[in-house]
Image 1: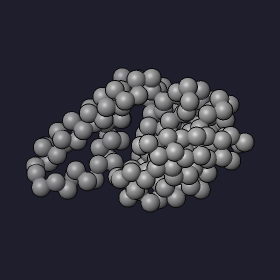
Image 2: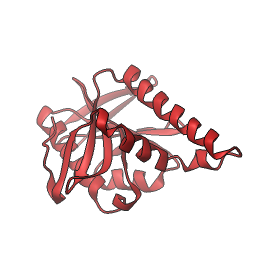
Image 3: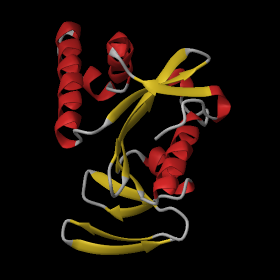
Image 4: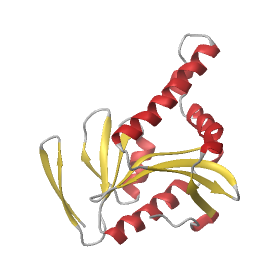
Length: 179
């Protein structure tokens, strides 16, 4: 799995019920799209809360064995990550940071820790990203991920351990990747 203490003074720990207000606030901070809806502030906040619950339930249905973590720096909560450690892959389901922790390299540190976990298990590390999130796509490519499927609105990206070849089937298309 993941090592709790990481480079850069980051700590990753399982989330718990006491983290719910932080996780809700973090999710709220990522939903600028909903904040521009032509509606009352209360309605928008209620909508964001409903979306937060729907996301959590959706992850639970799609990835029943997923783990949910809080990312901390100097005992301050700065982000979260959801990861599914499957038999054939490690999948990053979601990763996000509070605004003041963005663009500081923390995402790279966490992803590199997950690459180490995938390397130890000799499985690919995968994730999906919105096509419109160009900065995230550029970061993932810089970290060695390759796009293996471009089905709108998301791209499926994969990183492979050293000397690993993967045959991937996505939407009945076959890909072969190797490092």
